[in-house]
Amino acid sequence: MDDMKITKENLARMSREDLAALALNLSSIVQKKDEEIANLRELYKLRTAERYLPSSEQIGWLFQELEILDAVLSEIPGKEEATEVAAHSRKKRPRVNACTAPAGTPVCDVFHTEGCDDVITGNDGISYKRVEDKVISKIAVVPRKIVVERHHYPQYRTLDVEADRDNNKRILFPSKTSTLGASPSLVAGVVVSKFDDHLPLYRQEEIFRRDGYFLPRQKLASWVITYYEELLPFVEYLKKRVYRSAFISKDETRVSVLNVKGPSGKVSKNGFMYITIGDTYDVQTRKTQSLVLLDYIQGRSREVLFEDMTKHGYTSHLMTDGLKGYLTYDKHCVCWVHAVRQLKKILKLNKHDMHALEIVKEVAKLYDIDEQYRKMLRCGEISTEQFLAARKQESEEVIDNVYAMAEDTRRQYSPKGAMGKALDYLYTYKPYMRTYLDVVEATPSNNSCELVAKAFATGRKNWLFSQSVDGADASAFFYSMIETAKRSSLNPMDYVEALCTFGPGCSTDEQREALLPWNIDLSILDELRNRRLNAKPDPQRTTVYNFVGATR
Image (tube, rainbow, N blue to C red; front, side):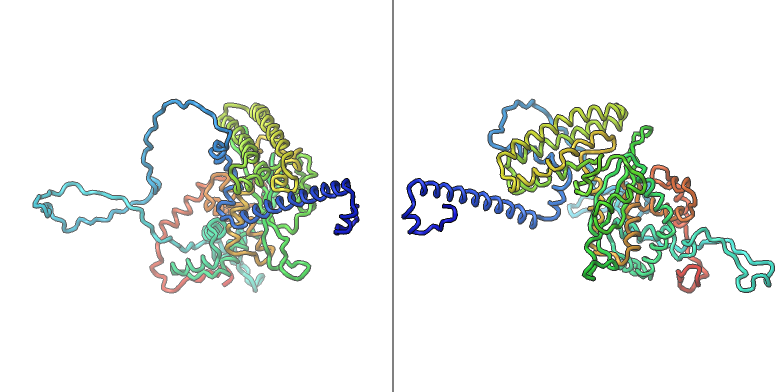
């Protein structure tokens, strides 16, 4: 009967039992097709909503913003609960100025009092006597000051001219950067403007030209690359230092390099900026020492992902977003933000989806628990052992509840539907969702790497690609230093300038260790900056300066 064609003649010859079986079979087929169509419509609707959602909203839902669901969950029918709220009073908030400036900001006075009378008469005929002046403070801007630093190096001439006829002079230069026409302060300013303020070099060239200085972007790029080359020993030391951390997080974001071609001869689309963050909790200071490292890689095979970990012998815990290349790693921690990301997308379509809301809200408790005990750890109220034990006990109860909710929900939805696929992440990475509870430095999410990726992606939109692998490596290093400074609560401009000033002359690991963010003393820059602030023009100079270094 299954192979029989449904025609009028065949139907006429069929018995009543065969007709009933055929009707049941057709009903089952129609039901399956209806379920498939419903799943496809749901997935299409979800994909369409995600595609046309403003990027600002997409970023907001990627990170930890689960607390906004509290109000939504309370609106679910059947979830109303009558509670008594005690009477309370609300204090009036003090007024906060929108604009502030440090107390040490320079002050100048502008007087509008010249020619003012001691007594004036208003239109109403009332006379007024002048009293003390009314002073209104206004924020003002002085165009940035660019100075010429004249660096003096000892120069020697041979006593025996005949012994060295062709080259009878010797100059003691500490490094290759000594001969450049750019000081560390200029390079630091260019680097921070490009990689933190996201200003491409051609825009910086226009800004310099507007201020009266001709500094072409080709020269700016050359100076930055030269400083990077002189800092390569520090780059290698930094990489070794990252993989000596107690805990690392990893993520990657795409980047194009023009000189790297794919099999078709076009620019390869398989290039990534590989983000690694190393964290080590210092019991003495009760602070986490963090280092950020970005590397350019080709492809995301397991060999590429684990190359540096294997090289430097890292065997401790690793936090990722769930890239399957890491699944074989024993101490793998998986991000909880990514675990509920698809559920959040469902909530964008239907904010009253009770099952998604309850799971997402339960997961939010993991962040509250972590933050509660981490504050106590930072304040010295509990030890690291107490922190791990208390957090683990409470968090495991929450995780058990999450999987119980997910199991109940999964029975009610098709595994091929949006909800089924959203829950699939939780079950795929179930063995790794609790691993972070064994590490002091680990949080429930990989947001630290996501924020670095976001900063890189924001800048990437301004220049889209790098010209060469060397350019990508230089970009990765300076991005690393800027993000490292941010995680250490340092001014990126100060930190990069200090690295460019003292890094090229370092010859030992002890000297390089002193340049790490928790060791460096940035007050050493004060004398250099005071010298620039007090700089005055050379009264005898009548020609323009040419910054070509020591080669001409």
